[in-house]
Image 1: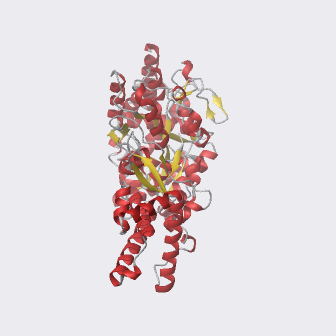
Image 2 (image 1 turned 90 degrees about the vertical axis):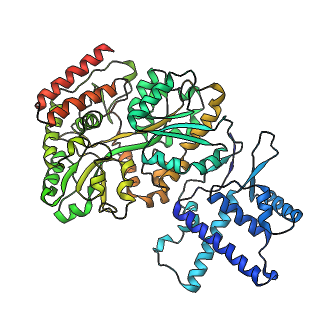
Image 3 (image 1 turned 180 degrees about the horizontal axis):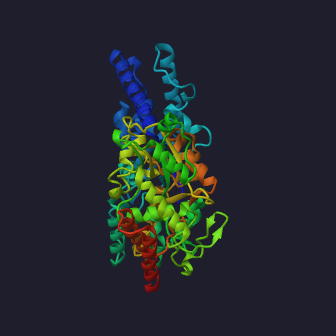
Length: 576
């Protein structure tokens, strides 16, 4: 679908600066008019002001409202609006099926003119009256100046025609920071797609249950659903998701722009079943200031990690060496799989390749569990030693619980997904804010560094009514576009599935995490083989999370835990 280019979706800082200039000009114009009508601001300028403010606030602008703010007679105002439409400063979009009613939007050229004007006005005011100091390289950041430089991602586009989906677009997501940012931006996205968005968010287990329950309905309640990467194989095999190449032209997604690991993880039987919405590797977060004070180098190996954790572990003063997922079940199960990967061992007998291990053969079903191995034993013994330098409640810690004490300054290191980084990056009171370094998992002897990829894809339910498919496809393209991903990041997200977004200069200024992850991707350290997306992976994770929890509690030895997990996983495979 062709799209009219619309105004830029800007970050909160840029938006606030633009709004301040707009308010200043509006107030200044009122002051001039109050002095004498000879100084009245022209209708063109008042119309432009109203359009820009409406866009920044996510409000619908109609011809009637523009005529009202122009402060000139109706016929004159109508001519001025038409002049601005003809000159390409205002764009129209039909609001009704008849096409007789339009909403009006500032064009890309109008916004570019506005950002340039705003920048000049600010610099003039600062030059004449003084202003807040700022970094020498920051002068073009304000008012969208950075959008014009260094191959920045182009602005979001309003669709030429509103999406036709009765009741609006319905989305099922996970209740994490990134999807919550998307919900906070709902009004802006509704303006882009021209219809309402209804989003439901659940915890990870409830999300899975609802997705499966939804697949059993005659017609899907959702147009788009978020799917955890390890579920892709199962959801494809069970017919829960529609193959994207049967629903759309996949080239429209620009597949080459996605991080390779994230895009491959969305496939099953060589077909894509979702679009990466979050590529969020699990990294090692570490306090750079604490490491510098102790004279420590960032750990690259498991031995160096244990040494650093031992050095920084000071429970008498409320500081602990490291936090990780150790709660029984799913949380610890993920840790087990990723720790085995740190020692060069996948949980399945995957063939080796240059990037680690090949997952291309998984859909053929010729695989078996590989848990009770020498590498598995080294991983288990590593976890037992890690336990010594962990907080006392480590055996109940899961996704959020391991990052919160790190953000509070009580933990020196923590394994965590990038999507959780806002807990400390956006909290100016956090001791970890501005002091966190990001590393791939430290590895055991002979193993290659790996940053296990997690996150979500957004897919289309297989039982979606045909009359809703076109709208679902268009919404899916908008929600996962580079422009949308940049907007999520500017509003607090710390996940990114696209190379173009990670290299955007404004995005890189937001957080060092994006440059770090981009570098890992180029070094081929982002990998999804640690949690291969086979239909049985959820049960395997649960098995490991139960047997290894007994080991950490001292009920069984590492060898006994490995043997029990292997036996149960083998029985699972034999029963499927």
